[in-house]
Structure formats: C-alpha cells, structure tokens
Length: 164
View 1 (tube, rainbow, N blue to C red):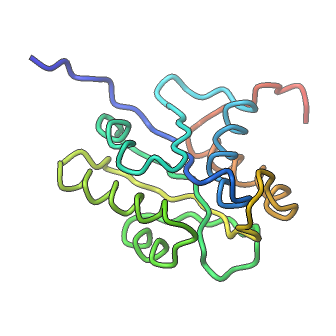
View 2 (cartoon, rainbow, N blue to C red):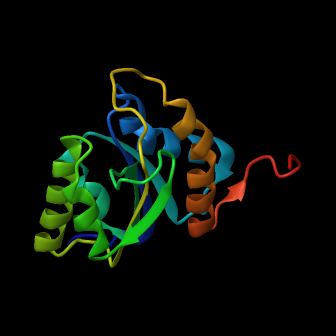
C-alpha cells in the first residue's frame, strides 16, 4: 500500500546558469533559500534544465511556483506573475530549449493526474542570454524584487529580521 505523502508548496527555479539571465530562476531560488526561512510546508528546488526529470517533484505538490526567465517583450528586469492559460502563451516565446521541457513537464503531469491544483509562473524579462555565469546588471539588481514577491506568496520570513 502506497503511503500518502504530505501535500506541500513547491518553489522550483529553472534555467541554464551558463547563459547569464537564462539562469535567473535558479539564482532566485538560491537567494530565496539564503535570505528567507521557508514555512515547513514549502520546498524549494533548483530544477536547472532537468525537464521531465522534475516530474517526481510535482507529484505530491498542491501548489507549484516556477521561477524562470520569460521572453515577453518587456523592459529587461520586468517581473511577471502568470497562471493558468497565461503560462502556455508565455512559453510560446522561448528563451531556451529548457522551456520546451517545462511545457512537456506540465503536460505529462496533467496527463498523469499529478498536476498541482495551482501552477504559477513567476518570471522576469532577461537582458542577456549570452554565455556567462553572472546575471546581467539589470536582472541582478531586479532579482531581489522577484525573490521578495515569491517569499511573500509562500509566507516566508526574512532570516535577518533585525536588518531593514
């Protein structure tokens, strides 16, 4: 008999950290984990470019927040929150091949009946997708805004609350 796992919120950062701003989702999860205390029912995952290998992470999640670079023809560093039918539309303008994997991941999870009841895509318009491990200056300076919005959405508290 399969033991029922505890339902939770999954915060998943995806992207290729070798292509500057393409890795902003991974960098956002790293910053979230270093600056905030996540509630016990929230798990954060560096999904990198794992595609369908991330399926087990979705299976027991009640809600998933995906952090990623989104090509939306907005000024670089613009933060976006998308859900429901807005997500496939946003992924139609791909910044990289991993977004094909994200579309497949969500589709397979849906077909298996394991898609979380709430899927939210938190993203940011990239400035540069060139080879490099550092975020562009504009995205780097805007990353804290994205992280703060996600932290608020999951009820995380700042690690060093004495610093304002």
